[in-house]
Image (cartoon, rainbow, N blue to C red; front, side):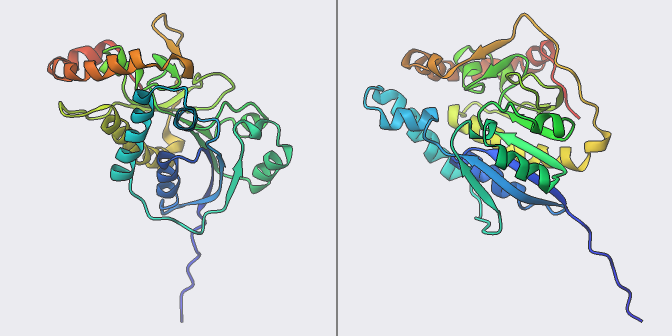
Length: 272
């Protein structure tokens, strides 16, 4: 007599992201999670992203253009992935999800077990209410210390390497302000640069997300505390001056690593 085994039902994920190398890497790695199915990827085009604007606009100085060109080269080198043709994708313009009611209803009808956002514009629609405890936002930065844009660039520019990392949080309508699920700091070395640090954080984010999804029921989220030290950065803050400052501060990694434990201890993070 043949014993029939029930096929394990995979949990459904909807990903809301952008369309740069880092986002495609993240998308394809999620699609490889064994017990999960990436049912839909909604991705914003790159037309209004800072990297695209700097590249196309002749008014931007060559130093900034070079920075984003180098970032792409490093991401191509370190964030390698195999394309998955089975992923269903919908391309939208930046911010469209907040007024495209048909798309929002489509996502609701899919009944995903998790919605994950990473690198997209601020979301303000009923998806937050409908999936308030299953909507995970990946913020490349340590909240509440650093919020907004370039939050793994500014800690280098400010010589505050202890604030490099990533935060997984339950999404709300604020700027990187939701209850925290998990955080981590990357393992940096003396020879790292702005782009290798960024790649390390993105790569490790995939590993950490997998842990979160498999242990989600056991995780206790923590409400973000309001602190005086919290900083919010915008795209317009990025300049040649800040770029040169960050490049100069890379020489100070050695000093940070010597006192890493003592410095990090003063600024605790939440980890599962």
